[in-house]
Amino acid sequence: AITFIVAVIVLFMLSTGVFHMRTNRLVYREGAEIYDESIGKVESKNKEASANLSRSISIMSRAFTSAMTASSSLATYSMLTRDLKNLGFESEESETALSLNLILARTGGMLYMIVVIVFSWNLFNIDTSISLITKAVALSLLLGVATAGLAGLATIPVLIIGIAELGIPTEPLLLILVALDPLLSYFRAGTGAVTAMAVSTFACENPHESHQEGMTTQTQ
Image 1 (cartoon, rainbow, N blue to C red):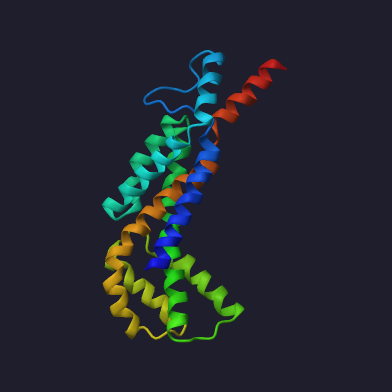
Image 2 (tube, rainbow, N blue to C red; image 1 turned 90 degrees about the vertical axis):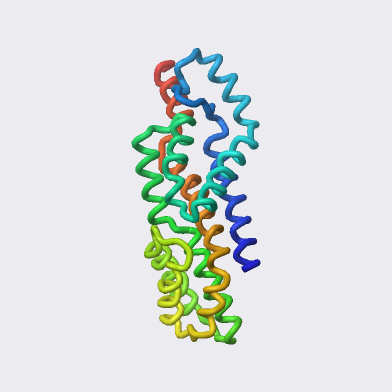
């Protein structure tokens, strides 16, 4: 449990860093387009936004805590799309990217399954190999997607299937998972929300870069 929580914290920091890197030149304004003012004012606000790391942390923290509260990353969809729209990303692009990432990029579930599998190997002193590790990673990716929309104890049957496929005894682990999963499911949901937000900023066209390209074209 401690290992998983530490991994979640590290992944949250990485996701926040990626999100800040992609949005630090953008101005966050509710219900307004970013580039509807003079170039001078926009550039001035962009310079202020580039140093505003606290804004990125605030947005990602809100996404994480909202997903934890609902125990589902999918519940944060409307909030995340609103934040991307307020940063200037196209609505259609951000909605598509977020929906795909929240459903397919189940990083919280994948990370949880990898930690459980590694814990099981150590618990039962199972010798590992490159092929076994590769199989475990592949299963974690597939089972992570398979748990889309599931929360709490509903994910345990899927996890048990993956563990059994790797030849790990499932009976001793079942009681441990039933006891710990209700707590760890909140962290799984939060991780899924922040990583989906970070990845979506790469999938969508950056409005600042688009504006700069447009200005360069006009100058030429």
